[in-house]
Image 1 (cartoon, rainbow, N blue to C red):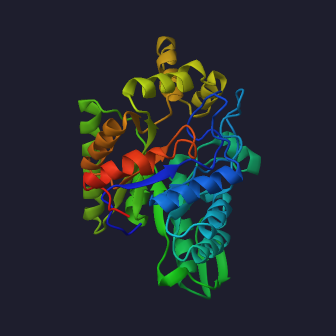
Image 2 (cartoon, rainbow, N blue to C red; image 1 turned 60 degrees about the horizontal axis):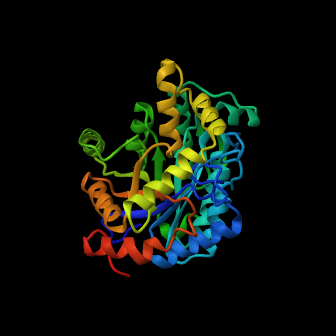
Image 3 (cartoon, rainbow, N blue to C red; image 1 turned 90 degrees about the vertical axis):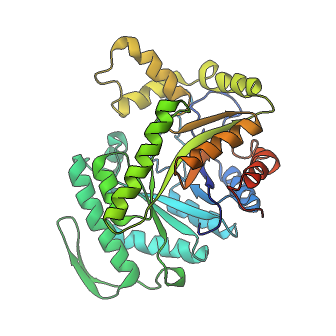
Length: 365
């Protein structure tokens, strides 16, 4: 991802069924291997920068079992790296579920397959329903990141050293040895998806990039909040003697006119919403606690319209302007989702990328 593009653009969540659209629509994303492979190759050929998967082990139920079909992300990344040439592909790893020495070896394998194009997205995890599948009890928030610190310390040492011991509160390792080391004597880019204070402190200390997905809009208050958040994160990293890139996520739903785009978005996210899956997601994330009953429907509608990030909906000119605005807030890049990553892809090379090149946000291929 070390290129001249001012705004890095990638796909987010394509490894999971329905992507980020909790919809009953028959054309929803299947997340089959063939579809994943085709989307990755299209993105690679067009010059997109990265593919960022969601670490998901269990779906949200409902009629579609939203996100219930998904690929494990390190093996998914390895397969896609073998089938592409330039694009960076991340694996999203839950710290409590992967032993650091095994994870280090898996990631080095992927990194060699991609000649240095593998990236790690490290997450501490939140979903107790998923953790129960592994017989693991979720730790309190502070302890999760204490474990994550030991985990990443052990991982980085495994990437750079041989024959070392590691003794901590969570890991007791003896005589660790792992060959080969990462491709080109350079560690994979490390990203952390965190919104809590503990998570962000962890990212500022240990990661190259922080992925934040707040509920943002294009109103003045939301834009001001996003601008201050990015500046605060970069300033905090500088105080630690580090630089960090800040990424976010969003939706791209492009049509020749805004009305066509908004009508289709309403069809997907309201008329065809999988409301049972949305309710399950809100329950699992604890979002209904303390929310007055009269506000439940408003929250349901917001999650139905894809949860978090920027909703870029409109004509090609409007979406290009929205992405330019996101870049002006200080974001390094954005992970995009589409109703169907393959069928909707033609809007990128035909409409969006040329406009972003003319705006100076992307380098021409």
